[in-house]
Amino acid sequence: MSKFSFSRTFPYPPNSNPFSLQMSHSVEQQLSLFRYLIQTRSFGNATLRFMDSLLVSKDVKSLVEIRSSLMQLLRSESLSIIQSIAAESVHDKLLVLEFFVRAFALVGDLESCLALRYEALVMREIKSASFQLLQVSPVEWLKFVEDAVQNGFHSVAVKACENALRCIGNDDVQKLGRDAFPEKLKATTITEITRLRNFAMTSITSRSVQVQATEYLERKTRERQKLDLPYIEKRCLASTSFRNGIKRQNMRKLYERQSLLQVNGELHEPHPNLS
Image (tube, rainbow, N blue to C red; front, side, top):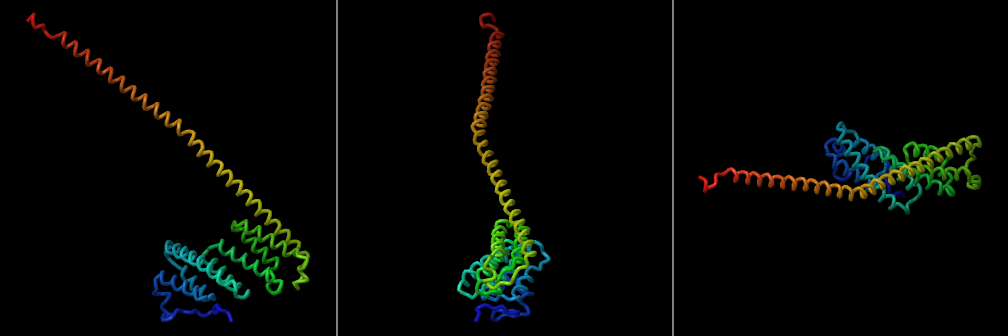
């Protein structure tokens, strides 16, 4: 018997009023309730609808804060739960993964959504040798690759392309009891997946070159700043010395002028013996 709840009914916590929870409770209490639902393994549509209701806000700032809080909560809880279900059945694992894929999609966390979608596809592909219904169709792989490329996750797109091409080109398909894949559709799908893989690889290479160029320019800028520092310090020192020299020269001229004035004053005074 499954340890998880995938029912459509909303499993409210003990001693709670189901008719006033969403309306009267604060955002913090609603987030606490959502965490309770996740931790009690309530992975049904009702939990997703409750989470979706939290994202309805007239205040843009509040919406951003709630979305961020939900994203952090989902990342933390999903990691813990996925690690804890290692011994569960494939069916339960896939249902849990599907729940979190939908949850991450609702909060707009595309990276986590695609990562779990990929994990679910790989799990199905591995287990399809024993359970034919779990087999991943080339169209499913193609759809995932398109989504990954479109959203800029090129590395995972390349991995998915490799899995897809290996799946389509597997000579043991008939031995595994899989349905035959029409040759025309097979060729079209392979062509499209190959095109997307090449595009993703080119994007990765281009990004790598851009990153290397940026790092090179930043490094050269730092080196130039280090080289310019002694020159700036020397220039500042020379400028200071020059100004000090001007000051000393002006002071010397002032002393000389004062001395001349004093001498002239003495010359114009009457001599005591001549008075």
